[in-house]
Length: 352
Image 1 (cartoon, rainbow, N blue to C red):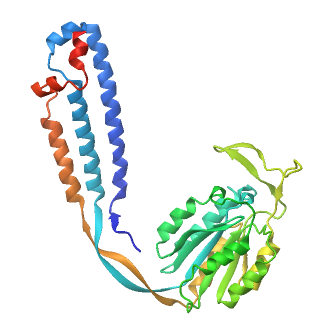
Image 2: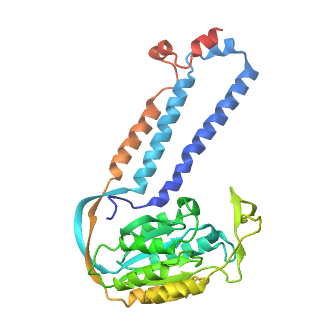
Image 3: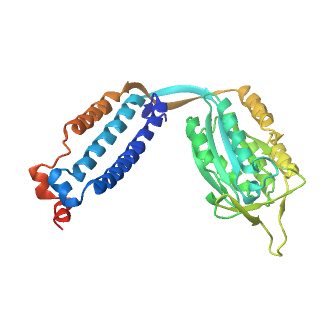
């Protein structure tokens, strides 16, 4: 479902940097004034010269000014709200991505590493899709749904960027579990063109993966596999806050070498009436999948989305003007009620 709100000009959000800049300038000026006043006279003399000065009111004026600027920026960005939910008919295919997030995908034998390369491939493929629906699964020792099947490609790319090995509790490469989970993603049994794209280094440790792939094919689901990484093998780096602290070792204390296993991925693809694609060059799998999906027969499905988006900037502009007017007319001098309240304990401080 498409979003209820849209931002017409998000570039204006960069102007929000003015708010912390104004606060910083206020603090610097405040400290400069304090130092200058101390050089000029002591506290008693300053109290006699400016008995009604108030730090509290200066802070309130600063808050009004910052809020006024913040709401003005929101008005410039012009949020829009969808006022009508429509049901639309589209034509497309269902594409589910199964992303391997096992530790071996952190190997850096392909820049920047296998996992990031896999994300780049998926993101580029999504960019090439039209009205097709997409879903994302992550797996290692177990498989988990990252995003249910949807027409919201932007959401798919956003969720994809957060995929990492920490999302899966047990390590390993259980492609068979990803295959089983993928079956639940396709909610239309009559959809003839359903695709599962597995992106992995192929280090599968399950014996029944081929049987699962054949079962997918029997249900009319085509499985394509994309392999990332070098076949000669690579070490798995261990990092803390981005700093390398060593490499993964086995129970004997030996450094683990992880290899891409294209034969495993080829066997899975062949069993499911699909194709294996080398993913070390990003463009190769992107172009191959684009051609496969582009020439596939499209099925009609219904989707809901908001329409008739209306401008909402006027509300934010009104609130902005209110705060800016309060800033202009709110005097910095103490009033009688403020002297009674004395929130900052200024009077007691001056008496002492």
